[in-house]
Length: 428
Image (cartoon, rainbow, N blue to C red; front, side):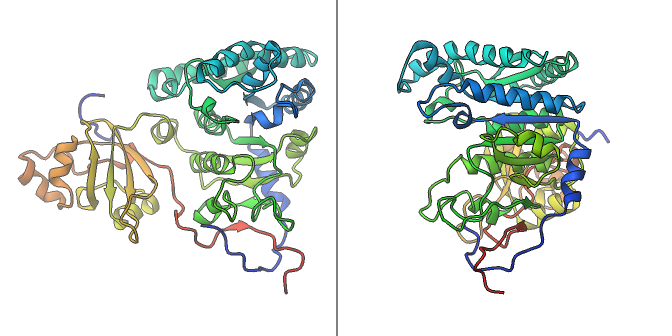
């Protein structure tokens, strides 16, 4: 991008807590009432049998449930894993290949079978599947991003079901793990389409208040704010990730709720999970939005556009941007990383006061100065910029109209606002 950009206008404490009241039904009713477009993500663990091959009965069940959602007048996009499992079945393989090139080949062979399976199952309900394969670069570029959004909307207008998956013959990150997931991709598709609801179907019932393997673990029905305490629930007491890749699901929920949508994590192995969700039943864990829907351009800046560098800012600047919607001024900048030019996208983060390391980025925005210029004016008052640079084009390093806040909650494992039930034996 060229030219200067001016504005156009740890674990939750194990301490026993009293049992909270159930989540009001009005909360879920409100979520469903405002939902016209939903993105459903189904993972490999849900779609495969015990032998690792594609479960055709699960495809049929899911297609029936999708038809039920569409019958309510809503639009639905399905983000589906399962290409490798489908390819293994077609090739008669009993073990998942280990070599990356073999995995890519099996995924390429299986992708057509996966979509064919959805098409066959959806046709039973007089509906059709449309294959959409994406890679990260498709969403980084603004023009391609808009083209994808327009294509998906046209598919929905034709009352077909987009079946979205990562293009494994080009993108390799998902294939490097035993069970790749599309949580991040699903969240990006949801923000791209301004979908009001993201449903992540996993092999677990939802977000648990402790490791799911513990006998007294219970599903948290409602999370109002994702903070460090909620993120810590993705780890068991041994420090490993819990079943179902919960860390990636919480990250996806954070993205969607910051952008103005809601998210449900529930078990995809139930044959009536979608009907129950859309009937307003207390299914899985509901993450509710932080506020109004974010403008489309800011959603792209916040989660899809490619960053060229980062700025470390002080706590005062972070608070002004997050809480008051302020612009970023030079006085709040502490350090600069990377090499960027005017109009490039950069991320904003603060230092952890205890470790002096950078925390997770809390915002991203289009910068009005080059990296070299920002290094010269970092920490200075606005009126000093002209004296140092010899020119004073903008008061703001990043104007608020070009800033997208992507993380409001603390990264520290503080007290969480999740509705966490206590075990039955908790003292009064």
